[in-house]
Amino acid sequence: MVDVVLAVPFSYERNEIVDKLLKDFRDMINFCIEKALKYNVTSYAKLRKLVYEEWKQRWDYSTHFCHSACKIASSMLKSWRKKVRKGEANPDKPPKARKLFIRFDPQLVKFEGERLRISIRPRQFVYVQLKYGDYQRKFIEEWRKGKLKVGEITMNGEKVVVPFRKEVDLTNPKDWIAIDINETNVTAVSSNPHIVRIEHGLRTIHTTYFEIRRRIQRLSKYKPITSGKLIRKYSGREKRKVHDLCHKIAKIIVDFAKEHNLGIILEDLRGIRKNVNKGKNLNRRLHSWNFRKLQFFIEYKAKLNGIPVVYVNPRKTSSLCPKCGGRLAPKGQRLLKCKSCGYENDRDVIASLNMLRMRGASVPPECLSMKLGERNSSRWLNVTIFKPP
Figure 1 (spheres, rainbow, N blue to C red):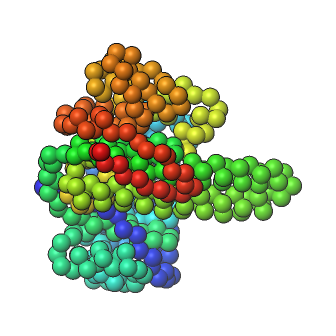
Figure 2: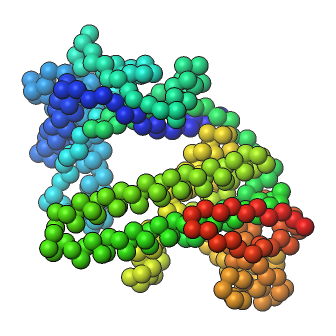
Figure 3: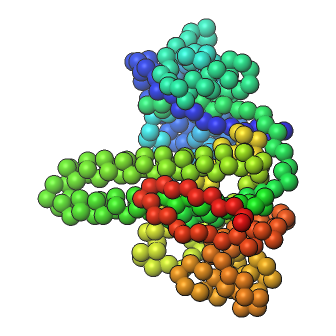
């Protein structure tokens, strides 16, 4: 049994008390950062002891707010110092809290379904009314039934983020599905056996909005304020479309895995943007490639459904034959052919087959003989499932 956490955002009704609390908490964090830098304090416990008395004189809130501010300040300084050692941050520019947010100590807040009860002083509470739709209502109902628990709640100027925890049993399935994530498609091969090809329009979205932003930037010299507003507008639109499409792709994959009782194998692609030798165009494409967002959505949706997710090293998955282990050579735009045994297949299918072998999953002969049919062109999303003949 493992704990799976899913953070669910709620809108809320703002008021003057909450606005003041958010601003005061930001000041608390910056106060803690200044004290830690002045006295060269690195640990949370020492920082809390250092600022406690002065904090009580400056703010008339429950002392748990001091503990939360010290934790966040310590975390920000730790991250900054680490970046300074790597040469990724300026040692003369320490971090500073600019955005309005609060990470509540569990002693300070109580989730009541439709509202939050925030303890700002002993026996003095502020109630925040939450706004929610059908998506959030599902989690509230599960929480009321005792199937979900609530973690550390966070509030910013627009949202309240409630992390719901669920205890799930991740069974060890007999069959697995290996997923190869590409710029224009997601290809998955399962050991039961099936091939799932999802052709998506993520690259089209990024390319379209990149060209829109480039045209707007040409106007920035003459109308900087207008161009800035337009760039934010279209960047937000791009982000929302990509977010929605990644959710839909992840749902298709997880529903398929759940239906056939499959575990999920993903590529460990950490550090790919740093390790790949790339030119200007490839650099832009890699930074707009949403592999990690999509993997994150697949992983949390899978674990919520009790489906295990494992990661394998993708090294040489597209260069070795899944049948004999020989070297592969390109044959046309998408096909690869083995120099030793003559086996050939689509490059994405071969990568997925090799991932299955690396996980130790059984690869029936039908998997090796399966081939993709004609590729269907779709601007946004098209799903094709191939079965053995």
